[in-house]
Amino acid sequence: QAQLVESGGGLVQPGESLRLSCAASGLNLDDYPVGWFRRAPGEEREGVACASTAFGTKYYVDSVKGRFTIARDKAKNTMYLQMNSLKPEDSAFYYCATDVRCQEGVSSIGWTFWGRGTQVTVSS
Image 1: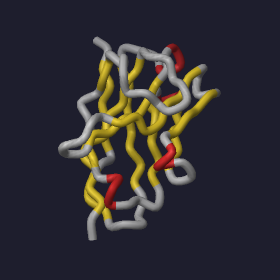
Image 2: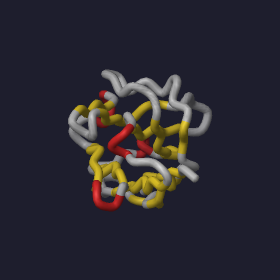
Image 3: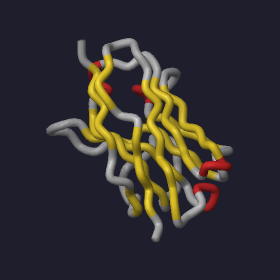
C-alpha cells in the first residue's frame, strides 16, 4: 500500500540546520511530481519546494530560496528537504506530497497524496 512517511523534525535554535526525510513505499518517487509543504498555526498551508521530471526541475518559495534544498536518494526511494539557516518563521508542521504538477511558486492547491508530517520548531 502506498505511503509517504516524514521524519527528521525537531526543536532547533535559529541559524541551525535540519534535514527532513520523506520515505516512499508502494510508489516510485521518479514517477510523480513531489513537493514539501508546511502549515504554521493560524495560517494557510504553504508550498515550500517541489521537484519534477525525476528531480531534474526544482522550484522553491521565495522565503526559502538559498537556504532550503530538495533532493533525493534514488536507491532508498526517499526525498529530503535540507533546511539551513533556520529562522523562527520557518516553524511549522512539514509534510511531503505527490501527484500534482510542480511549477513556479510551489502551489499547495490540488495535491492529493500526502504524508502525515513532522513538526519543526525554531526557537531560542
